[in-house]
Image 1 (cartoon, one colour):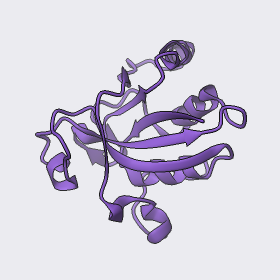
Image 2 (cartoon, helix red, strand yellow):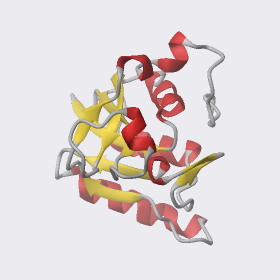
Image 3 (cartoon, one colour):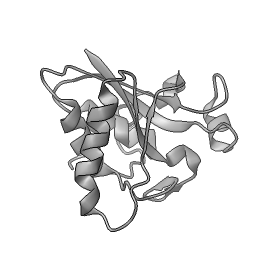
Image 4 (tube, one colour):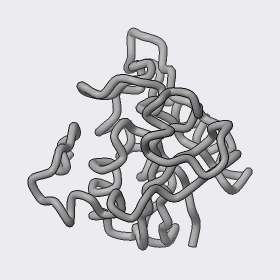
Length: 158
């Protein structure tokens, strides 16, 4: 099993989207790559922590590849949007891929390079190693399963 951490705006929809893919074994929403230990949702929304809302995706690489997960990222994220996705604005809504396995970095960068010509604006997605990760509060986990009419800025069928 492998893990990758994905930032694509509000984590509720990103989690629901990736959680429905065959080969994804588990998802967990959290806060990543900020400067504050154990932040709360309110802390992250203050714009003082530097954390992004993210989804940790655990997947079986024999059933779904990292490239497929990245292709799906490009279906739901505007990689040219700085600190926002859809109507959500703020540094916690930035987009990016945070790798755990150092070997994934080259795969991610190569995939982004392949997609770059499709965009006239600069791709601003972060591609970084996962420096810190804290699970979000329980009420955020599987939020759209618990709240089927809850807010979601992405097309879950993309």
